[in-house]
Amino acid sequence: MTMDDRQQHVTRILQGVSSREDAWSELLPLVYDELRQLAERRMASERVAHTLQATALVHEAYMRLVADQQMDWCGRRHFFGAAAEAMRRVLVDHARKVKANKRGGDRMRVSLSVGQLVEDDDPDKVLALDEALTQLESEDARSAEVARLRYFTGLSVAETALALDVSERTVMREWAFARARLTQLLGSGD
Image (cartoon, rainbow, N blue to C red; front, side):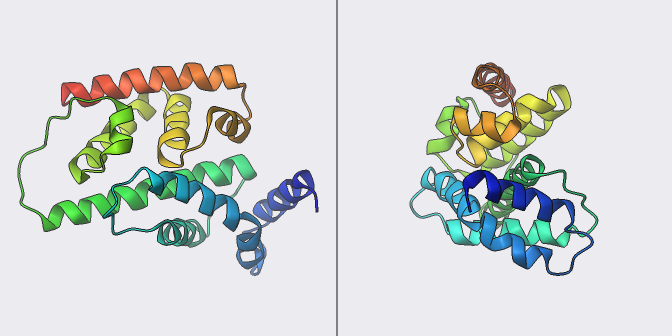
């Protein structure tokens, strides 16, 4: 099966997932490698002692997607966007759990670039990034989607463009805006 055939097959399964009981089990082998690669890229930027592994991230994100039985999938783009969001939520929930186990304190003011967040996985910073992404999404949904795909799943510009069905130039423009706005939101502590 060619890559294009496989992508079309995945789209057909996704569009019928709510009407077929076996759809999720048929879908997993087709998308697992891509989800695993996304998770590995994302986890490669986490701290070495991170307690969450790429396999666990894929499984937890997939289980969250499966749990939403009412979801009508429009295709691969919709599914992988939801998978990126699910991975983000898993990492945020994990950071909240880690933070809850540590000393309390007021909200931390974070003044650093989004690029630095990739290198430093402090739970406070992950939570601050989640809040900033939520704010960005209310202002510019596509920039927020680009940021999630680039940061949380580690997609390249070309891969993000393919996932969103837009040009690489559009992704670069949206990514530049998202980085600048997220840096502004994180730096202001608001």
